[in-house]
Length: 381
Length: 47
Image (spheres, helix red, strand yellow):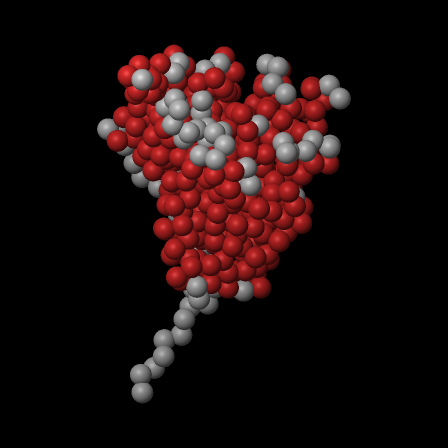
């Protein structure tokens, strides 16, 4: 009897595998990065703690443990794709499309900034990933955490933790990843170009109609992406309409905070040693890094082309802001531009390209989903 | 269908459609701006 009692008290220790121990340490590292280094704390704290909870033996706190509290959140929020969709309402309520509406040409950079997704898709296929997995991994290049979660929860649930952590981590590393690429692909003369600052004003009516009209248009083209595009535009419409301030405020504060907490916790708790500690995970991180780097390359190269076509009016650095990493990318562009020429003020143009990138990433994901559906590739049941 | 073919179709149709959609949205924005241009608010004269 004494033996049974003692065995019950040490069961947690005796059932601890080395894989679980490694993941607990990894979760602790993420917490250190979040709390001490202030790297994406809103996400890494719930993800890091979720990893620890999910890997504690016999705790029933893994996202896959039937009936556990985190499993309930996982089934209700991740498997239904509800949480990423709700997150998009909050994101839409936070986005200001004003700079983009004043200078819609910047939207072309939002398109170029998605090219890395498709190039990485090829690489992932070449490395032996299945089509569903390759698409889910390549979407890291969208530099949009909720989009990456949405697509991978449809097609590659077992890779969801690795893809989510890669997507959010690389977004935080944009100030480190982008500048060397920007400098390598441009000359100092190009980086020094001063772009005319003429902040055109946009009427409030246009700001209200844009999410409605552009949203309907994009959703008709790619209905599979409607949950993302629709929620994004709903959030933005609430913000710009000015008549539902309470809803807009709660969307961009309370709701987005709650969803971020649940999302991080469930993703972290779904990361088990058995499915995370594989060579595949390292490949996912490498491919994710490549996707983001290629986005920057294609954006800057398009910027160089635009410089030629506009006879020197466009600074190629602005192309690097055509990603969804808002506002990091636009700040990086501003900083690099000022390093080359202190009189250069690229922020306004970069913000336009950056919000174009946010829109571009959702369009790119929606289009990919539509093409896959047309090819008969269906989501995991 | 071979993986290379799949990747090529995804790239061409995916990137192509993304470019076209965003290009059309650019024109949509310009059309909206032409229909509803920004007007300075008239200052009301105090009575």
